[in-house]
Amino acid sequence: MTHDPRTALINGLLDLAAFLEANPDVPVTTSVTVDHFPRHHTDAEKCADIDQIAARIGSTIDQADIPYGHYSTSRFFGPVEYRAVAILAAARARHDAEASYRGCVQPDV
Image (tube, rainbow, N blue to C red; front, side):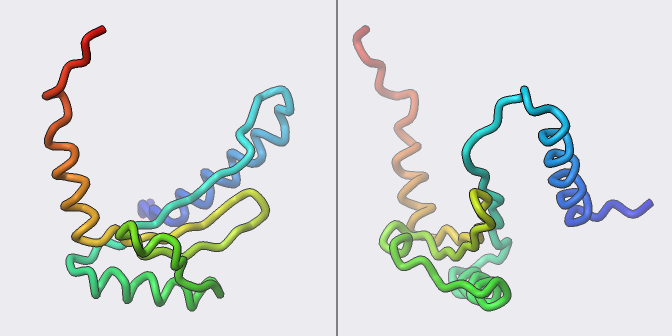
């Protein structure tokens, strides 16, 4: 049997939906987001991937995310969102710099 991650994800989502429908006493959240992150190396390649996804899903690039270094698009199915996002190099570098201080400062408690 071939391991196909796409088929496994789809089957897992269908199984989850069937389980929740059959077990109405199990609590659920009000929304779900499925994220896709391109695996390319350059910002240009990542943005091109997101542009292609936007065209395929019939959406546009989310302009509100760009100042934060995220190039993204999404489509909603009710409270379920499919989101494709490229985290650009400057945003990753900023995050790495901020995270480099993690654990160095100990608050007086």
